[in-house]
Image (tube, rainbow, N blue to C red; front, side):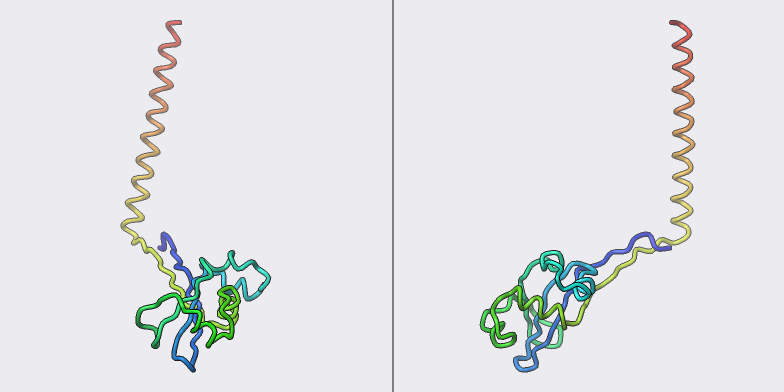
Length: 139
């Protein structure tokens, strides 16, 4: 049984064959597909920031904010918003989904604890009502 599902932000990547650099932006979970369907969506609703990152290699290595020179060479502009939109339109989306699994024993234990709490709450309510009735008989 799945208890919770966690989604990481999306990393939308585009590789520049000429320089060997991979550029990427960090988008909010599930936002890239929505933006592609409606590109008029404000960019701040899609990406965490307009920073464009780059790294060299097939996916391993240290990433950093791309320099103006790298952006100009690869995208013919240094405007981070324009570059982010370009990457969002054609880049590859990479995201992770984590599921927290709960086994049947844990589920049974949680149900038993919930039932015990409900019984205790009911007993306390009954006791309080009895005390109220007893005290009311004196007045």
